Image (tube, rainbow, N blue to C red; front, side):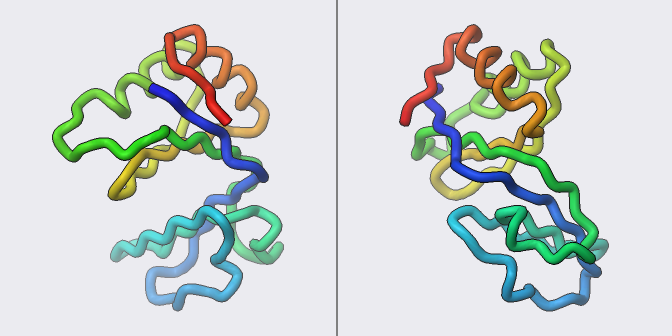
Length: 123
């Protein structure tokens, strides 16, 4: 798989499930998921107010897609080498491609692991 890193640092936020989507949930990459238990928002960390419950310090890898819905093993091809290196990830699938959040502390190592596994970083 070919992948690229998105610039900046991101935060994974948790709001109450009945909350409205706040204006600060904006930027070049944003993911908003509402369930019965929470409103989860992923967006640039600098946009998130300090009082918001959030895990900050994430970087984003984007797979170069699009991938057909019939494609199999896309997530596995990334997750398995990272799991063997004890690097956790958060995955997000969109219509065209997949994104992976990796902690800032392990990001460079994750890129090296993926490259060693045969994946290719592109600009």
